[in-house]
Image (cartoon, rainbow, N blue to C red; front, side, top):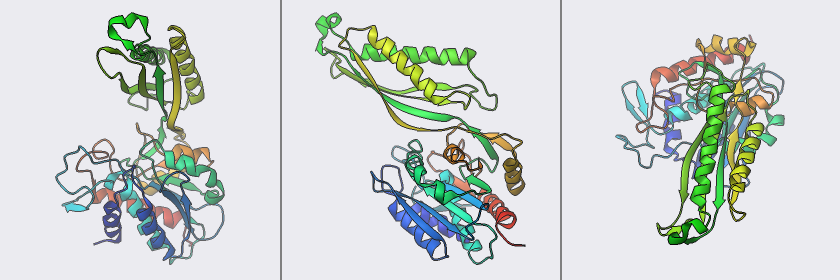
Length: 381
């Protein structure tokens, strides 16, 4: 049994679904790294019983390597698993368990690398970053980011190990998620035209979002590297009303947009707020629409010709790609850290699904990449 297998076995057993604390996992990682000489700093969340972690080893100089992973996983409720989701199960080349692909497999390889470098004479530092609440919109790293610049310094390269089939992802869209709280007037349905139906207001607002989507699709910025090559708008939930014979007084709408880096999210949000006001103004003054930002993260865009891309490719042997899902790489890039996304497994075939698994072949490929990076960026010749 390899060390990375043993570590992954421990990591999967921590039920770090985003609505639960991750402190037990953080304590395990903290103890693991401290025992190997890493300088470790826990970054506690001010609102929840959660924390992130930063650790480094080696000289305090520019350069070196930063590896980043999130500790949380998506829920298993309502999914039909054939194996225990929080117990690592091996079947042939596959290791099953929640988070094996997204992304405790990469975290296990991070820690295995930490074990292998701690006895070496390093010319540059290895830095490790573990976040939380990534799955609900990169909330954790957004709360951590103001404390990160003095810790991160200027690494030569940062790798966010989300599952990319060990290809080097150089782009993904940014995202903002919102709740629209809508108020109308309560009344008896027999007199419905005399009242403002909150669901009518909500549906008109949805129609305007669809108009925005059509306009962007037809004339907006495009990037052919993505399956959907333009900024997208999505309504995920609409609720309101209590009974058929009552005019709904309130409604709630959850929506998001995922934007190309060419489309500035503040401009899109401002347009949506103008649209919301136009919808509200079409109803009597008693109608209200308030928009609340729930979460968001920036996109990532790295030129294929950037030297950090060829560097990462030389370590993993993979090609470049763009991914449809969001990551924390945009946050790190926004802090001035050269960042790409590259990790084992596939989000399309494995992530967020029942019987989530990672293949030993992908973990081995990840290990090779990290060892290559250590040899070329960390060790003295």
